[in-house]
Image (cartoon, rainbow, N blue to C red; front, side, top):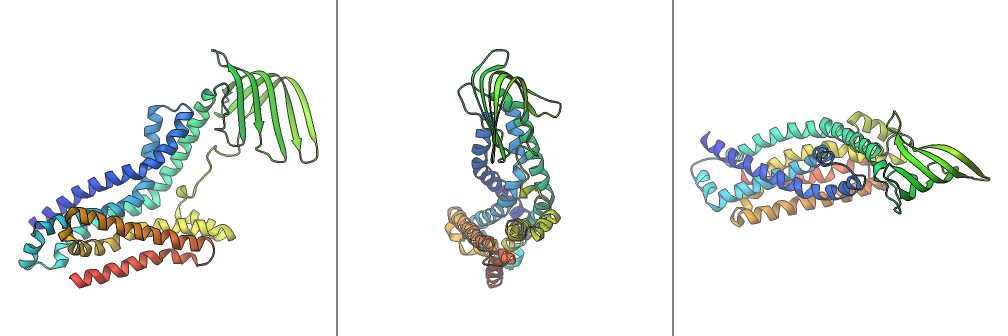
Length: 350
């Protein structure tokens, strides 16, 4: 038990370091993309922190298997470099007993990963969309600047020539293409932007013209006062697959016909990434023995190489499924291949 606790303590510490580092690396792309959106509409620091916390479950589903593989290779690689594995095996411990802490850690991570993939990620993705929509509705109207095209609202383009200190816009140009059958162009001398009770942006315009262009006709309306609501159908940001539960994904997949591949791929990813921890529990200790003499650097390199090959293969098969060349169950092929290799390597070392 002393040996198990010793290995498990070092394994757990290495896992925490790996998952924090991987989360920071994978989060950079999302931070850059979201920061351009959030800073462009004047979001506060607390809004950015809330968004970063809400995207963590989406990243954890991917980084937990990666961190497990790297932490095992680094920990057991260090034990191999210090000849501790040789001493343990010489003392009569079987390979399965030495690898037992990996199975304990992977079992805990499997439960957490299943919970994250099936429940936490859909809930956080839904909350993330609602949070961004709230910030867009509340702060986007305040970020309209003179002489700059404002495109935060999908289908609506806004340009103003001037803005007074009390929030009155002058020289307003609005292009509304939300309805392709009846596009509108609004030009007004002045106006004010506010939020109604439903937190929907509304322009109160004065002294202007509305040009309505249909498929076979065009209409011009002059007005003294005009109320233009930027009420969009649904949220500013639409619902994504990541916030759907497994039953919702399955119903969409079987009802979408030609568009079902994307929903099946998301469904299989939700299940295969947690299941990947089982395969890695067998693969990582066996690989660590073979790369033990290479030390931490060798283990880190091998871990990244293995996961890169797995992910490239996964993307390849998903693209074949998306184009209709393979059945959607082919998404499990990379997992089955990795599991077969893991079991063979583990049995050879045991």
